Image (cartoon, rainbow, N blue to C red):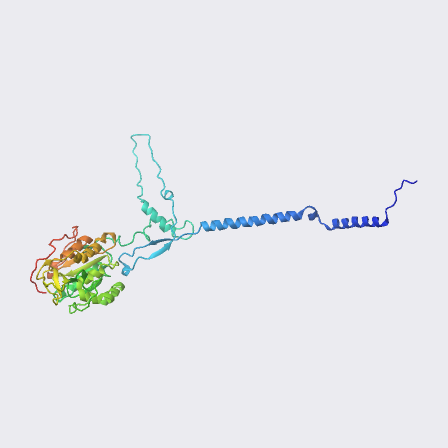
Length: 424
C-alpha cells in the first residue's frame, strides 16, 4: 500500500490556482504608496488643512472687528466770524494717547555737597490740556501713529471750545471796549442824527469791517400787553413808521446773514423800531454783540388793551389802549402800573443778555449823543457785561476819549425817567 496521498480532484486544483493568481495580480497592481497606507495619510492631511483654514478665518475676522473705528463727533465754534456761519460738525477719529508717554519724566538732579551751586534749566510749561489737544490733532492723521509730531506745539485748532466763548480781545470803539468778533448795529437815522451817521459807521467799521449796520428813523420801543410791537411774538398789523429818515439801510453792505435778516424782518423793524430790532436780533446767535447808536429821546412805552367797563389813562391812537408804563423824555405821564405778567418781555430780554458770558447771548453796547438810555436798556447792558457811553464829543467833531479799564456802565437813573420837553 503506497503512502502517497491521493491527488485532489482536478476541479479543486484549478480553483486554488485561480485564487492564488488573482491575489498575486492584485498585489502586483497596488503601488508602493498604497502599500504604505498613503490613502489614510491624505485623508488626515485634508482634515487638518480644513481645520487650519477655519482657524485662520476666525482669527482674521476677530482682528478686523477689533480694529473698526467708531467716529467721534465734535463741533468747532464758528464764533462770530465767517458771516456768522453756524458751528460745523466734523467727523474725526480721535486716537487715544497715553499721557504718560507724552509727558516724559525729567531726570532728577542731586548733589551730595550741601554748598554746591546748581543751575537748573527751565522746564517747558506744557499743560495737560495742550497735550490732549496735541494728541487730538495728531490722531487725525492717516495711518498708525501719524501726525503726533506737531501735536503739543500746535494743538489748539479744531475741537477747542465752541468759538462763542473765545471771542478774543477787547476792541476800542468811541471810548468803549467791545468784546466781540461779529456785531450788528442799529443806527438812529432820524434827521437830527444825520450829521453823525457817516462818522459813527466809520468808527465801528475800523474794528468790525463786516458789521451789519441797520438804519431806521427813530429810537422808540412800544409794547402791547406782554408783546413787543414788531418783535418776534408780534402778530398785529405792520406799518412803515420809521421811513423818512436821513439814510436807510444799505443792503449792499450787509453780509449774507444780514441780508437774510433784512429781507425777513425789515417790515418788523419799520413797525417796531429799535424795540422790534432788539427783540428779534437778541436771538440771532451769529452775533456776539448788539450796538445801538442814537440820542435815546423817544423812550419806552407799554400799553394795555382796555376792558369794556374801564376807562383809559392815555391813548395810543385811539381809546382802545391805556398807557401802563412810560419811560423817556417824551413821556407826558411817566408811570409804571404794569402787572408781573406785563413785565414778561423785560424779563426775557434780561435773561437772554444775561447769558452773554456763557456764549448763549449777545452783549449790548449803547452810544448816546443826548440822553442816557432808558432803564431797560441800561439793565440789559449791565446783565450782558457790555457798556453804555455818552458821546457828546461828536457834536463838536472831536475825537473819542482813550479807552479805560473801567467796569461796564452801572445804572445811573431810576426805572422811570423824568419827563423833559425836547424837540427832535
